[in-house]
Amino acid sequence: MRENIVIGADHGGYRLKEEVKAYLTEKGYPIIDKGTDSEASVDYPDIAARVARAVQAGEADLGILICGTGIGMSITANKFKGIRAAVVHDAYTAEMSRRHNDANVITFGGRVVGAGVAFSILDAWLGSSFEDGRHARRVGKIGEFERNHS
Ligand code: RB5
Image (tube, rainbow, N blue to C red; front, side):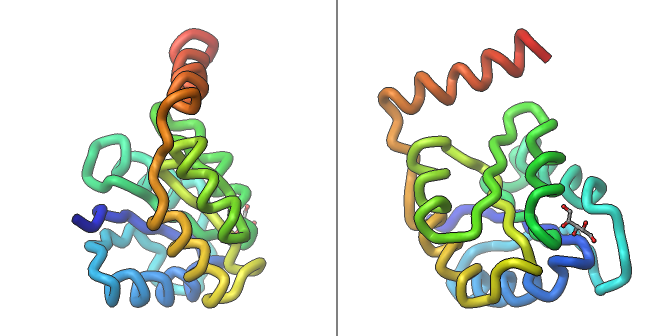
């Protein structure tokens, strides 16, 4: 079954968000859009928080965040417990972020990648799954740090 996906972008990622939404809808993914709704300037942390909270709450299985570079979105999303947000700009790191890091949010830059690369990133990410085993131990340690050292 297709995962539920929540998506969000600031003004730097708005256009690419619309393209990504159309691409994934066409592929049969249910998409929840948390904004923004135009190219008017907004603050990326507000959008990252909406997407991170939707994943935390189980409203969606996975999240996609797009800003100018993907960096601000990933920094913000990773402040939310249980969120593992990976900023990626190529298909290989997208795939590995899921297989080894169990990334439940992916971020990239609308000023860095075009639609074609974004689609290949998403195909790689959504087409992979967590490998478990030694990777589960390592991802478990991330959760431990979150619980005990923050
Ligand atoms: C907005 O100009 C830009 O700073 C934002 O989209 C993002 O790239 C931040 O990391």
